[in-house]
Image (cartoon, rainbow, N blue to C red; front, side):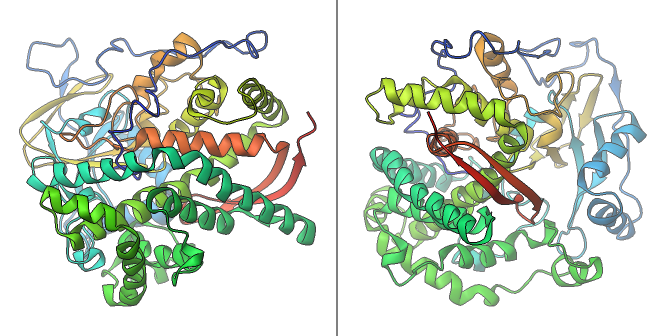
Length: 524
């Protein structure tokens, strides 16, 4: 999903359609849709600006906050972040304390994993986008935050997500993933339909036997199989990898993200096990080798292209593995349960509207689901965008100032020195009350119509505004169109089969733990 967790994807931008394309007729909903509730900032065409003295009426202020005593300050902030307050309250309390959405703080994990946990936090929709401007911030080795996992976990290579666009290999590796995605365009819809049809069959079987069915396990398997079949024409269950892929990936990701995750274990166990020292890569060496062998055998055509670009076959394979398993599979593992949660909580009225829109469009297109048909589903598009807004799959973004900067929030201008680390908590930026009315609420039709289209420039889930395009020279998630398409397909496949569903929601280290308790088959 994107450095957001999602798969780089620029060359297919036109094939999967620009999100800024004018929405088609809303005839199925025109009589019932509520007005879009949205309030824009005073300068909506420039959500962030780096001003020079005298160019703004906003006051120039000192950045509030401090880092506390060496070692003890970062530890205190870490304990508050994970245990005493929790992530959202940690940020909210500091906003209230300093009366500012820009302040200084420490970010986990801190000692001894991170050598420098100090950041300037940007927690509003106006200051946050400076993190996307690679002329002002450097993105080298900050994909996971103030620390970087061992390259032993990626074959000894710094993979694409950790490269700054100024580094020579960045453009080559990003172009290689574009090539992979372009070659898979015709297979995305049929392979998704095949893999997720099996998912729903498994969910129904679980419901008939136990009265409930966990969504996580079946989603992981369906998502991984879909990506491998669509990208590499390889079905994991037919290989030596079998059904083990998602489990192997989870262990491998844990060693990389463990220091910033909450595993639900007692605090002292987590502090000792995953937050004090990095877990040694040898713990997953055999698991990673199994994944690597599968991708090496499946991605020969990508490796051929890599050699033309001056990239070794080995480095190409490690990057394909990371892009598929960490970026894209990781995004689907996080976002699909979260989206199911929000749609489920919205209730029967939204379910009925989605079912009507999806089925009428498919019927008018001869019973087939195509790219063109997907563009005729404005409510489906809005629901996906709203899911990405209210709970972005990658909540944190980092960037190191390349030079002295002046950064504007809604209320003031702040000076950042060259070399300082900037941090943005994305859910606060995409719920900014000065941009999104009722930002804490899931409003399914928020992005419909002209007003909804205008809000898309404030949708920042992809390490860039939804209205901008990824390029070789930036760090925007080049796979944003692919992620949106796959997410729309998920909603379509659900409501072409069922009128409604019911769920129970629990906590998970990655996303929501969703249990399906009812699936009501389509009756119209």
